Length: 138
Image (cartoon, rainbow, N blue to C red):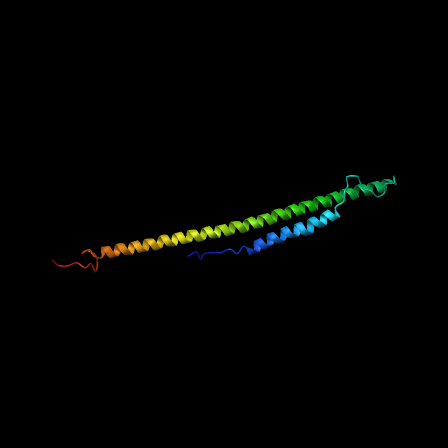
């Protein structure tokens, strides 16, 4: 039997694969090329002791750090979302398979019950008290 509801999970799989691929190929590679090492501080204005330049360097470093943290968080969220979509697809696929098996089991049990009931009815029809019972005078 097994002709119940079938969830098409291809879209979820495609989504998960696409997000993973875009994250690793585009975001990670672009981020690694664009990332700036700030461990040695901001390099511009090193010879200028003015307060405005120092304030600009501080804001620049804070902005880069915040942007970098946002990109890393975005990539982490994308990976989590892709993994969740893949897990949902697997769960739906296994649930559909289990549901189909259960439906087949129920169908088989009902078919067996009907067959048994029909066999018992045939056996009972030979008894004189049942309709059409084939009772014979002795």
